[in-house]
Image 1 (cartoon, helix red, strand yellow):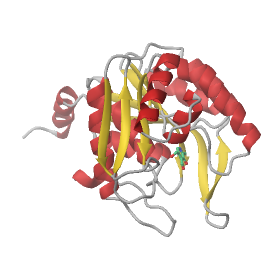
Image 2 (tube, protein in one colour):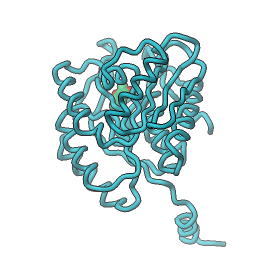
Image 3 (spheres, rainbow, N blue to C red):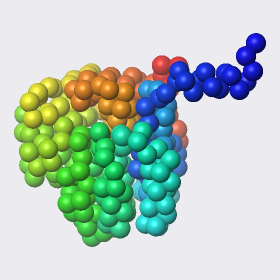
Image 4 (cartoon, protein in one colour):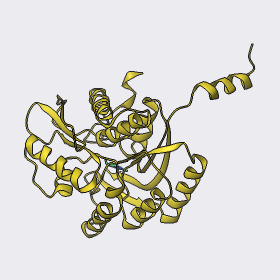
Length: 281
Ligand code: PXL
């Protein structure tokens, strides 16, 4: 009989998960943000790590708007220092979710610049429902100037794709055009999400990496966006890239993962459902 020490030594030799970091906010109800990212990483077999940028609490007494509290920039820097020191050499893949303020963006951009990465997946969360508009504009500009150029893969939703490309998106052709514009501007592979926002029976996303353009399509499940779909999609892309998938393979797997997670969604007393990453278990 092996002792428990032998078992952990064996496990250490055989199980070497890819390491994936999310730099994201907490969304207290567990549907979106860092919680969705970690659940996705776990489900897809990578070792998940989080640096927390902010704490979002929906306000049930104010139309479920977001109460947003940033984590101090120096506390974010401390988390990233701990993470990057612990996993120096093995941390190669990061997902960036809600940053929420210019100070946070500055700190995160500096930390990203401190090491080499294989994959920087940016979910360009541009506005947070209920955030003060002037502040959000500063944040959007800082994100475009300081983080977008570092990204290797970007996953804008309909609104974000319009903002990043500067065009109006009414159909799949527009979405394709936006994906090309965002690729030209960033050099990153782009997965632009039409989701439920474009008319028609399917939830259509467009992948473009400078060479391959592919329309990814799955039947819509309801007409209402599900909380955590965008976060889980980008986290799934990150996990798949970290495991060695190509960007196109990662996009396809992530789309299938999110489609299944939406089918298995969880209802609550909020007026929206949350994606469930654990459907396969
Ligand atoms: O789904 C975007 C998102 C990302 N990150 C956090 C959020 C949300 C939306 O609620 O709260 C922390």
